[in-house]
Image (cartoon, rainbow, N blue to C red; front, side, top):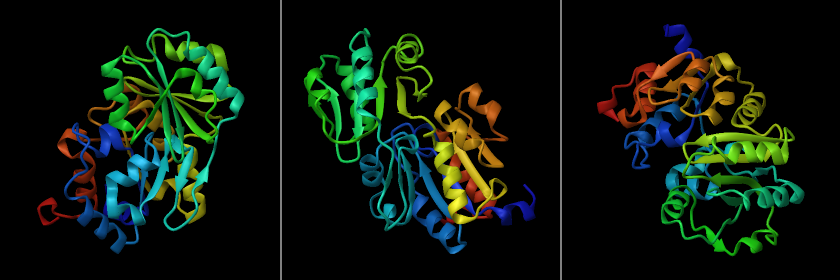
Length: 277
């Protein structure tokens, strides 16, 4: 990038898993000092993830107080010191999804509310570990009890350790058609949200609210649910470990998440020596 281009950046948005986090799901140790430098330069930092706000705010701890969180792929957006903006699914689509999912051989539905996470009892230890990697204190209930959950549900995540593209995604497409957002969000995951709810839509709303253009925006991602976000940023980065589909949508490539790629690109962009952080 040229010096003039670097001075233009006003907003940085990053995915979490496979992007900002390493493979042990840890934040970069340089992040607190880097965020201080971003704030000093009046650059806004936003996290855009399929994870719930409970998991994200717990992970960031005290740092969370000044971060903008686009959670549940955009179904929950949290600005510092403001009430969250929520987009909940109609009860009918929850029922349809539960009905369809009950017929699948491996996929398990995870109901994501703002306050609680719910998933059905099962004997698949690998699936239980996978769910608990991404969701904090989930409530395990009999399958029939999922229909009785009263809390508004922002997103339904389907965990399928055989991969959602084989069975879960086609089944949900048959059940729901194109009336809702169906996104492959990981090797074992797909997500269902209200139509028009994506990371990209949330990032565009953030840009409009702050008067920031795509030419002033930098974004990082690695999976299909990041594509709409990358399309909102002129400085779009696919991680080295990203899928080919994502790389085709990004203008640049960042080192892999295991190589601290986001921090390395930001330090290079801002003229910061990583050793000084």
